[in-house]
Image 1: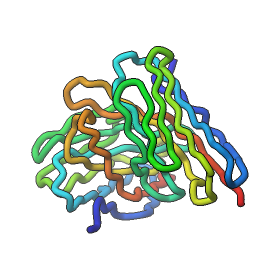
Image 2: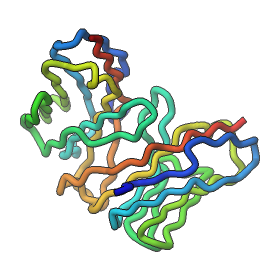
Image 3: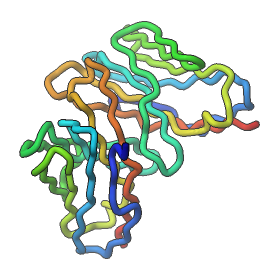
Image 4: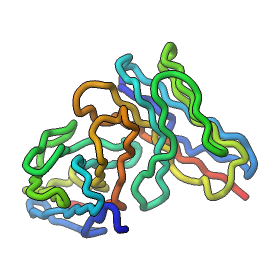
Length: 116
Length: 112
């Protein structure tokens, strides 16, 4: 069982370039999330989705876009990359959005992005 | 004042020591408290989950929540080198599709 798969693992972008970070999960989870993790700064929520066709902004959405056309896939698009977007990006999914059920977030292993 | 405060460490202990990791928070609406463990170059994985105040034990791990003090703790007994990782606290309230607020993480190093 693959869980949450993120590609690529590493990427170097030049300022102004664009790219799409891919995320797919095979657990039939409705809820999916994109976080960024900067050194010493914890995880910040970029965007999330509660199902196919439904997305919403998190804490730090500027400079990013998402789409959710299928249950399995939740790609994150970076337009006009900036050095401030250098980070490790994590995709996560869960079966329920309400943590009252104790549903854990299942994380991928991240994409390490450097913008120079 | 940040919503969730967590000492980044690193915290270095010898094998077999009892480890105490802590977070404080300011949002009194938080009701669900979690600890995630993150190994180097991996995604976080859920370690412990607690609802409201009280203790929860799972093997060598004990999670405590004191809502009156807005303080949560994770204790690790008989620590092992394999416990070396970053520990992130996370919490959420009960409103709608609530999302998690994470602490910055504490790096733990257990030496043999």
